[in-house]
Length: 111
Image 1 (cartoon, rainbow, N blue to C red):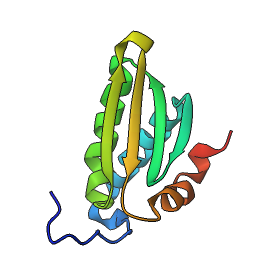
Image 2: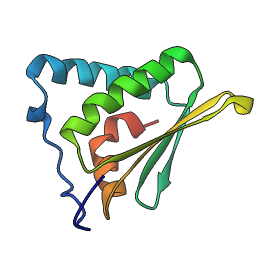
Image 3: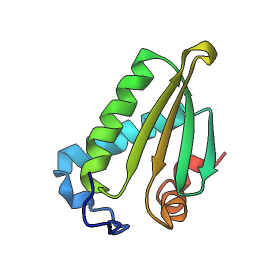
Image 4: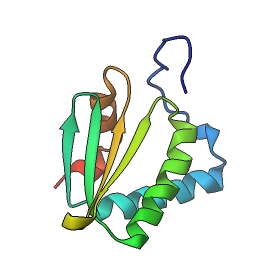
């Protein structure tokens, strides 16, 4: 939980992960976002949709575990809609997070 009422800086620190962990995190991100069926812009972030499969949920969990280390300003929300076989991952944060994520994930967002 964040204290003091201040928003954390909109800064990712890839060096917070060891080099091997950083490479693995990149590979997980590539594999995960390759599976994204759709994405949409949120007022303070991005939302990605995936098929609700056990292997995808495992990738989402692994992605979040490392991403929160290097980008502590992000909030993560995983929402599963079993009746639609959908898994939604939302990444949100303070003001300008949407633009930051669009730049960071530019390769993943191209159709």
